[in-house]
Image 1 (cartoon, rainbow, N blue to C red):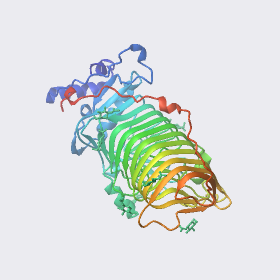
Image 2: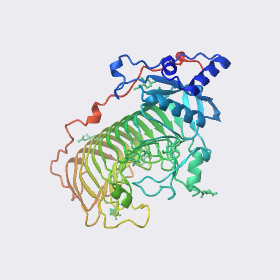
Image 3: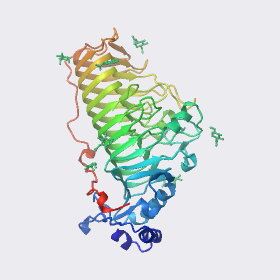
Image 4: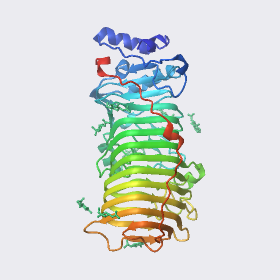
Amino acid sequence: MASYLGSKASNVRGVISFVVILLTTGWLISIKSAESRTTTKFHQPESNCRKHSALITEYGGVGDGVTSNTKAFRSAVYDLSRVARHGGAQLIVPPGKWLTGSFNLTSHFTLYLDKDAVLLASQDESEWPALPPLPSYGKGRDAPAGRFASLIFGTNLTDVVITGANGTIDGQGSYWWKKFKKGELNLTRPYLIEIMFSHHVQIFNLTIKNSPSWNVHPVYCRNVIVQGLTILAPTDSPNTDGIDPDSCKNVRIEDCFIVSGDDCIAVKSGWDEYGIRFGRPTKHLLIRRITCISPDSATIALGSEMSGGIKDVRAEDITAIDTESGVRIKTSPGRGGYVKDIFVRRMNLQTMKYVFWITGNYGSHPDKLYDPKALPVIKNINYRNVVAKNVTMAANLDGIEGDKFTGICISNVNISLAKKAKKLQWNCTDVEGVTGDVSPPACALLPEKNADCPFPQDRLSIEDVPLKVCPPFRTTQYRV
Ligand SMILES: *[C@@H]1O[C@H](CO)[C@@H](O)[C@H](O)[C@H]1NC(C)=O
Ligand SMILES: *[C@@H]1O[C@H](CO)[C@@H](O)[C@H](O)[C@H]1NC(C)=O
Ligand SMILES: *[C@@H]1O[C@H](CO)[C@@H](O)[C@H](O)[C@H]1NC(C)=O
Ligand SMILES: *[C@@H]1O[C@H](CO)[C@@H](O)[C@H](O)[C@H]1NC(C)=O
Ligand SMILES: *[C@@H]1O[C@H](CO)[C@@H](O)[C@H](O)[C@H]1NC(C)=O
Ligand SMILES: *[C@@H]1O[C@H](CO)[C@@H](O)[C@H](O)[C@H]1NC(C)=O
Ligand SMILES: *[C@@H]1O[C@H](CO)[C@@H](O)[C@H](O)[C@H]1NC(C)=O
Ligand SMILES: *[C@@H]1O[C@H](CO)[C@@H](O)[C@H](O)[C@H]1NC(C)=O
């Protein structure tokens, strides 16, 4: 605190609220500014801790679950944004229930949710500003006009961290799910976290639940780490994707546990003619140590919006239980773009409808302007070391007529079937590739060739980026 105040005499509001809090309530606030131990580290983006710290209570925040804290969050970030470029700033949310609408983040900034801190998303639509549709989508997904800003939103930022001691973000989504199901939305539902046009983004050690729609959406970003998230939504909630890396490069997603009503991870890059024109792929993406439960959706989906292209995706050590499919490709004529150089190894699947699923006729277009001759290129798709139990159907692989999906390689796969398994285990159309040591044996279009499907040996640069973990703030450091 001392350095927060000391470094910014012009920070009148912060000083006043600090003094008011001290005078009126006598709360003891002794937040240690995150020390910059060496001055040489001061301006380096890899420097872990933030020089300036503030509590949401210093901006009038009330953690009673009823009072709106939208203004408190907005003014806290606004205030901290003025000191953040000088050593970084951190906003701490202590234990409590903090009701809030949408607010924006700033650069060189950490939002820290302490243990037992819960951000409750407001159900008052006036607390959610409207944004235009994403340029690579052209239209809002629920309603064409546009979309509500996400609960936690940031654009054109660098060095942003959203973390805590496993604090919670609760989207209170039932309000939005009901409106969506009744067709009453004239803007697309908000997401919980969306960071756009940004780099050096880290989101870790949080529980995120009941999102109105998608949970975590990095879009047009690079250098992104998502780690240690517990994401929970009812399995019948609409479009509650876990994590959607979208037109991003150099991304690492790891150690997450996701229960959801839609794909646990959905890799995207724009929608039909808008995505083709915008032309930003998702590439160099590593997904590892993920556990997924999603009875009606995929563990990892590639698409269906993939018009900017998806390439160099590596997924390993993937566990799924009672999930519709493993790694699924979804595309359609009109999408254009590509899905290529996909590598998957070590999947452990229990109770699955389809272990392998590729869909070339997914449909779902933003409008009628799409070009049906814009055909996606799907090639070099590799899966190895897969164990699956209680499976209804091994594979449903459906390319596009006149646009074969090629270079599909599947090796070392052991599938045990459910009691009510399909008679036809491998259904393949318009695909081409090879298999090796696959049981039950694959279709004629994927002949047994003793294939040993590759997984890249090199490291992605994002694998070597450390998390910005600061010494945890303990509740003994402040009393609220
Ligand atoms: C957040 O940023 C977006 C994009 O710049 C802007 O439209 C929106 O009004 C901002 N929200 C707030 C609460 O300032
Ligand atoms: C954010 O970055 C994008 C892409 O570089 C740019 O088009 C846009 O104008 C920027 N927005 C702001 C508010 O700086
Ligand atoms: C995550 O939070 C837990 C619980 O507070 C803590 O023990 C752990 O160190 C945190 N991990 C990271 C990477 O910050
Ligand atoms: C975080 O909280 C969730 C939900 O309470 C729990 O399941 C998970 O194990 C916790 N994660 C860590 C790292 O403490
Ligand atoms: C949005 O939809 C509601 C009905 O759900 C309607 O009352 C309202 O006028 C609409 N707002 C706009 C801006 O179209
Ligand atoms: C096997 O899958 C069926 C659904 O296909 C499910 O009802 C059953 O509980 C599963 N059995 C086990 C042992 O997981
Ligand atoms: C495949 O799994 C079944 C059931 O778990 C097991 O009995 C069998 O030995 C396995 N086969 C291979 C080739 O690993
Ligand atoms: C196999 O795939 C084709 C093409 O998608 C489809 O028409 C057919 O119904 C499928 N058969 C089974 C048994 O699923």
